[in-house]
Amino acid sequence: MTVMTHAFQKEHHEIQLYDKTLFGFWLYLMSDCILFATLFATYAVLHANTYGGPNSQELFDLPYVLVETLILLTSSFTCGLGLLTARRQETWQTIALLGLTFLLGGAFLVLELREFAHLVSEGNSWARSGFLSAYFTLVGTHGLHITCGLVWIVVLVGQILSEG
Image (cartoon, rainbow, N blue to C red; front, side, top):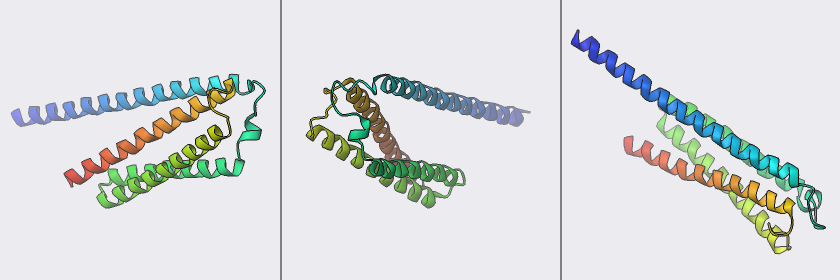
């Protein structure tokens, strides 16, 4: 009877821990959605407030934006694959996919920083107009989000290797 009680308590504790982890994940995800929805709404309201400066059609190179978008979507895909391999406990495949995700995220950040530097060098900084202020805030916050993801990948790989 004691063995069954102990096994039940252990399973119950694991379920509670999983429930808390799942709740924390959804709380994080929803707060992220609220944050970015607010930033997108601000951008939508201010996108025409150029204060006589250039608008988005004049500033942004669509092929460049397409490359950034494809890199970002590919990094999301490799991250998802990494999660699947982690669940199957395929250590080296997980590390490889997380490494690829890290490289793609880093490439995206480099492209974003180049774009920011180019805009600022042409006199189109966040201080020029409401549109550019909203743009730099939205994209800069997204860049910070990706930077945190890159740090988290390093932490995850460290944990995987230490448990390995």
